[in-house]
Length: 377
Image (cartoon, rainbow, N blue to C red; front, top):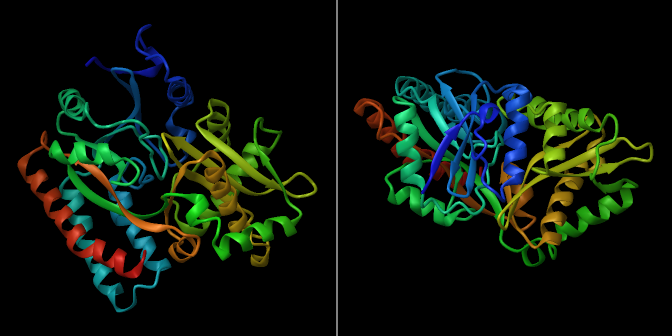
């Protein structure tokens, strides 16, 4: 198996594998524009070829405070603190806040943000497509040699979206650190379409007067509007630790084909609701969802955005990874929960760092995961 880690801006002529044009277009676009296409990400952007596969790779040396798409500390500690302000955990709140303080100390001591992520698309949910993990050992050996002292990680691993990859990483000894509870649907025609909530969402869209469009080409102002609608929901309403997609990133992903955008426009042509979906293998996930949060709640623009990506997954015959959050909303539309993990290889770091991460993983599985399941977070 041939492995090659390279800078996309200085790629040798034979670096890019055939048949991976979408991955190449995206990796090259981000390399040329800089990772600042996602405003709250600082990272070194690399590409990794493994046989006929191509992976985007991010390298971080211990920064703090940026989006969780590159920094585990942000996902587990900073985002966790924000979540405590948004969800009802009852009398557990002071205990969970104290626990997050302990995790903060533990993860900083373990230097968890000194890390290399493989197949990292800078999205809240990375899909891994046809990657079965047979090259996982060779990849982590190469990266361990190139970046000694760094953890090696793969985000968004779960036994539903990528069962072979999940099994291969576990068999190779990677630590499986639970990160979120996802909401998934195996069959949209059976589990979503017959639901009363789905019928109501369809009726709401029909009665709204909005025109649905699959964006084949961006009109002037579309990229700015989509970035604004996404930011209104996921950044302004929820957390600045979610990736902050710029208009340039919207343009890049639309032109490269990485994200498929569906929008609902009003009679004046203004986009009021958007769903941008990533498809890899037989799974669709919507990393870009947004709507005009200044509009009345009765307009149901979030419901419309949700309908847009559910309908798209159904039309394409795909399974749906609806990501995390809005548990009650997704459950009433047929989704069921799955625990997602970050797989971390710690074999190349100091034993005390490895031990701290094992303790961290134990705490997550024994304390946090039961709370997520019980509270349906």
